[in-house]
Image 1 (cartoon, helix red, strand yellow):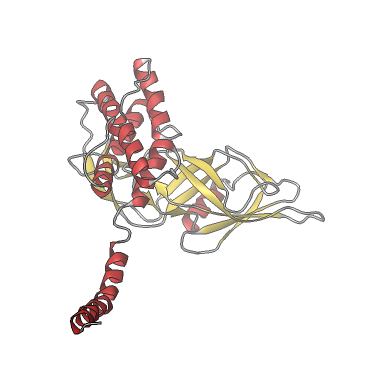
Image 2 (cartoon, rainbow, N blue to C red):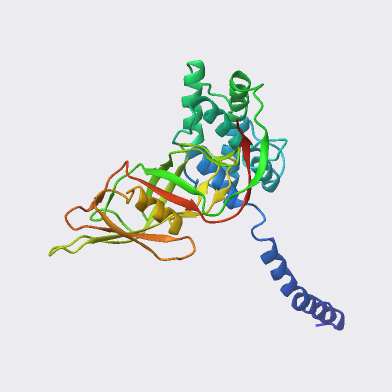
Length: 310
């Protein structure tokens, strides 16, 4: 091997040794640039679940739903546009989610259940007598023009109040013999939640509690033990807000005799972040029925957007 070739090989090896750590670091830094979590959140809002298709196909599908046609640019640019249009609200420009929530609440006095496409179909049929199958951006904008345009409801940034109470109703039953750990149980908000004159959580807003631990009721009077946690509740502008049963909510439940169902004996507040409450269900009565009501409460102070109402 000639001296010249050996020099070239040595330079190449040195370059690999010097730059490989940098390249590894760069790839780690670059990971996660595409906001897949937000893309999944958009899919849940639109369809009710997150797609398992390739990323490009997912972006294509969402764009066709929202705009009818696919947009130009990289996956990152296209995803950022979807996020801006569907999720991001400013005082001068509401997101599509915020605008739709405002329209639906203004007409019906509460939000409906289901994904955004199902809700939009139902509201169009109520208003126009038929469902428009076009892109949802144009459909929401048309509904706005037909219904509440001209009614001033300013968008305002407010700060949530820690410990603010929220009355909710279970939409599904919980049975200590059939429920499973990790199971989600739907509930809905029964009253508009405001900060002063600004609506932040409309009546009808859906949330889910999660069963974190469960023991079946047994013989010899052994009680069923159901522990539940509260994932975050979505506000009118799409912001996730931490909620739970803590002291104030529990005192309200007790004062109004709103222990979940007649079979509940008591509640153990465990005081954990995310706050888990335990409901002890008597052995003879193992079911917490749908329709049962309780108070939960806001457990964080957060800035978000609402609509100013009279």
